[in-house]
Image (cartoon, rainbow, N blue to C red; front, top):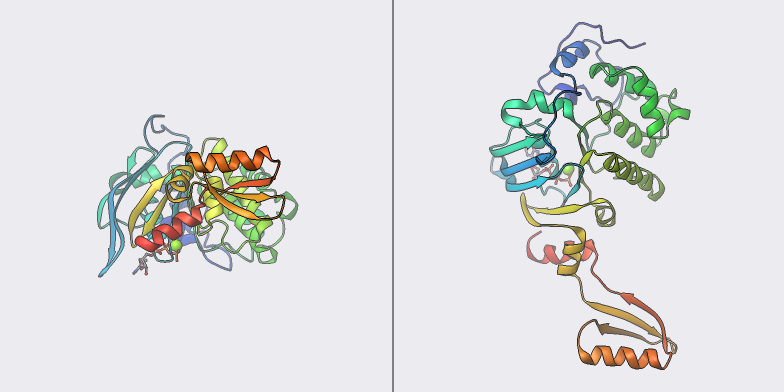
Length: 328
Ligand SMILES: Nc1ncnc2c1ncn2[C@@H]1O[C@H](COP(=O)(O)OP(=O)(O)OP(=O)(O)O)[C@@H](O)[C@H]1O
Ligand SMILES: [Mg+2]
């Protein structure tokens, strides 16, 4: 049985440093972390304030500019996705926004607080599902959650509630090492919800999941957003970004090269044409503007020749590829 009463030693990386891939936790960490974390149910940012604000944010590692002067804001309740190649700077951005690493220059503010000076106010209000599945494999799912619930001084009832939220009540008592990848990912999300974060950061939340498990995770993310959580996610799956995001930013070599709603981006980079299948099984690509196109379409329709029409609006993948030709 886990309690929050142990004595304490806390690494500088705080909660993230607690993540280990196997074994059981060092109970000594818990009270110190709890001391660092004030009540998450304290004063919150004004509704009109952005929940995330990055201003000219940069991070250098030696000669590598991992993040190179990015600026954006994310509104309360928004789902914002960061897309880009491996090494584009996505995880580094998340690490700066969750106050885990210091920017080389620029400012990161979350929930109305500045990361540089008010990280202790930010940490209770945010949480992160990181790229590593850092669960305690030899403990049950329930005990993993209980450990973190204690850290955040969340009521014991929160564990059962979260297991229910992610649909894992039935397997709560099983050791994590017996879980599938999808189950582990859902448990990680449950764990990140333990403090009822106002802003949830998800670094590639569906990487490696089968389509069904990925869909479950996406549904969970949408539900959280509907309930008012601000979501900041990274993904390599363009359809996922399109389905989930209110806005997406494309990151290339540490710089934002495009930022807009998926619809606007698709319109900007897609083609304004339709694919028309006629009765004789011939296929035609036809423009969506111009008298000639309209006349051709009208003629086919008048003669009853049209079987199907598919618009060929761009996909986010087209946007990605179009940008890749330029800047990615
Ligand atoms: N701790 C570090 N020390 C040195 N270089 C680093 C460190 N962390 C990241 N980098 C470098 O910064 C760049 C951005 O890395 P980052 O992990 O942010 O990319 P990413 O977009 O998350 O990639 P992926 O899609 O593979 O997860 C890379 O060139 C990486 O090698
Ligand atoms: Mg990454």
